Image (cartoon, rainbow, N blue to C red; front, side):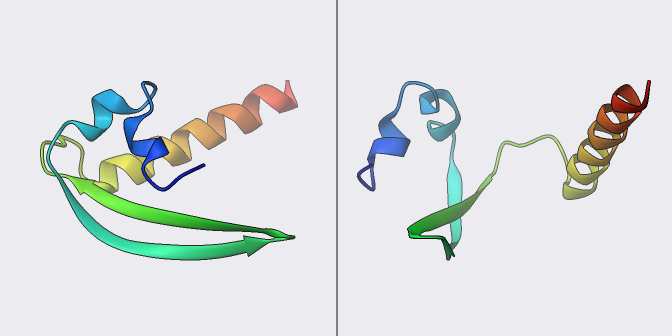
Length: 69
């Protein structure tokens, strides 16, 4: 995958069109594959970081509860 391929992909094109501020790039090596991850912040986002974290925790709890039934 080329550097700009993700940004021009139709699957993510709608999210990239909004104004974003580049934050940083992290590099992860898993096995023989190196991943470059660029984080960005969307200025038009209505959710706070706290809201996102709460939503993710609730989603994980729901998944665990469904597995235990």
